[in-house]
Length: 297
Image (cartoon, rainbow, N blue to C red; front, side, top):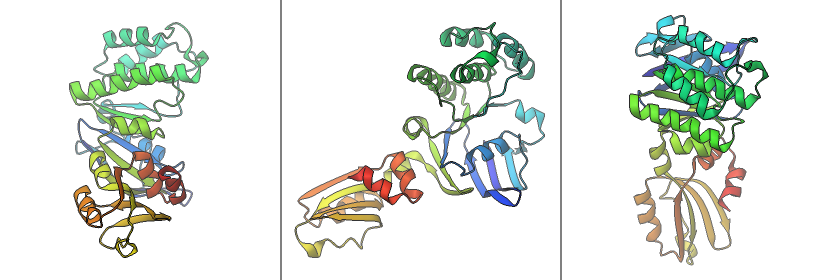
């Protein structure tokens, strides 16, 4: 389990992280989402012990991560800004990782090199950006980390490679309870693999909930009611309303059963109720009401 407790970080007087508190359960896949500049990468660099917070705590199973070699040896980290030694080939890098990580799996490394089709003897510096990302994924997953931290892991990868990447991640979570913290702009793929979602905005956590729970309590509704007196929705927690003629389009945060009971009692001639996608929830929660309207209509 990773616990992030009230951490704050400032750069030149500017607040990058503001009292951030999150909890990443063992054996889960935690999705961290937010706009550019929201603090996602800054938070991941603290979780992996690259940077030290100004205040607060980051604990891996009750032990501080920063300046803790034993804790760091249990964490695999794939940053968005990749780094490799300039003269190293993939084979050289594998030998280096083998010396760092106690549970290095040579058989997995060989399997993954074959699957991804990367040249072992070519300098990684000559790889394309997508090939470099694949190389880093091979090295980190072959280290068999207990905790995996990913910053935009599929950016620049083709659909087939993305499928291989997520399969390895999901299989390791299922087989050995690896814990994953992943930041990505690809909300559709995050929606397909994550158990929990945390949304950051301007260095603050605005939502942290199980994905199923988050989606089950927020809905988009299209409803048409002929009696104007019945178009009063004060009994509902309406987050957004748009009216077009006799049709009302609503975003409601409330249990589905309550919404259905209240709205069916109004004898609608049209009533559609659907959960919002993660992308729609993300846009709405960050204040993009006009963007939500484009998704609804």
